[in-house]
Length: 196
Image 1 (cartoon, rainbow, N blue to C red):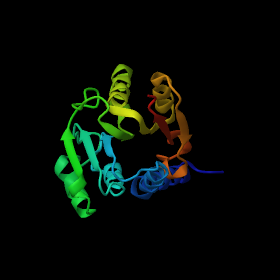
Image 2 (cartoon, rainbow, N blue to C red; image 1 turned 180 degrees about the horizontal axis):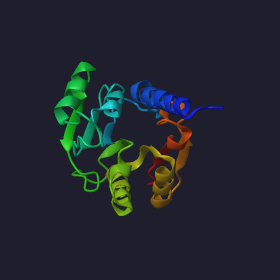
Image 3 (cartoon, rainbow, N blue to C red; image 1 turned 90 degrees about the vertical axis):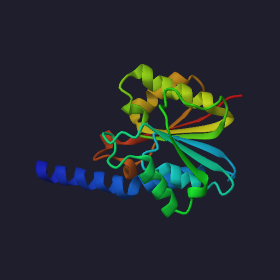
Image 4 (spheres, rainbow, N blue to C red; image 1 turned 60 degrees about the vertical axis):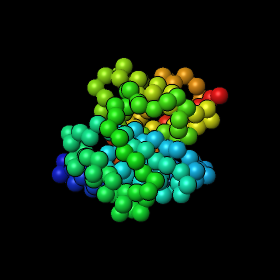
């Protein structure tokens, strides 16, 4: 019989793998699959310390990656713009990374100003469903026609975002590399190509 201690240790091991390695590998894979040309403008919502933002910038030698966040230490320790910019410099992509303080429910960008919008486990941190849907609407607003939206979030949330968008979307589980302790806390990728 499996003991509670063994289950807890297994969940902890899976969580640590996801946090330290898994999510980075998965975003590398997903960004490689995105078919980026290298000159895109990309927006990362809730960029935190820059994991997705920096990985995207590596694929944009003539493009530009912008990260927005409210910089709350409650959602992520050490979450501040200086840390993100230092991480970008350490990765050699500081020249094509910009960070801004902005609320993803009221983005300070013009309509159709980005080719790609990403978000990794950030939208669900907005307390209300109305606010979450507003963030998804804002992501679609700033995305140019034909542009791609990638949102990684917990399955139930990603499903609700897909239904809210109201156009063809793809939902795909990201597998054990993006489980936060168990399959019940696995992450799903929502992918949308904005219609013209």
